[in-house]
Length: 89
Image 1 (cartoon, rainbow, N blue to C red):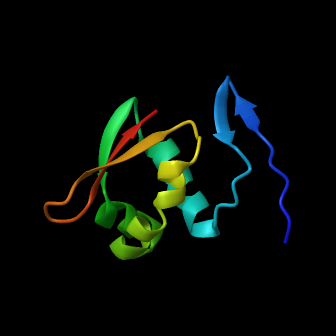
Image 2 (cartoon, rainbow, N blue to C red):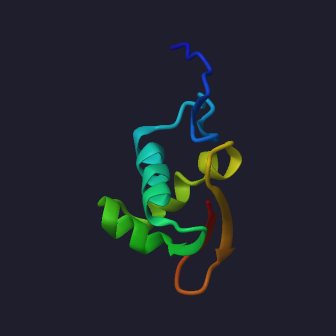
C-alpha cells in the first residue's frame, strides 16, 4: 500500500506529515492534542484508561509520535509507577 505524504496546517501548526500512523497512534495523538495545555505530564495508564487500551499498548504506540513532526512534542519522562510522558504543545 502506497501513501502520499501531505502536510495539513491549522493556524500554522503542523498536524500530520503524512506518516502512516495506525489507528491507535492517531487516537493517542488526538488525545494528547485535546488534553494538553502548553506543557503537561501524562501517565500511560491514565491515557490507556481514557482510550480503552492497556498501558503497554500506549507505550508501544508512542514511538511514531515521539519521532514524528506534529504540533505536540512528546518526551519519555519517568518510570516510577509506570511511564510518564512530558507533552508540550
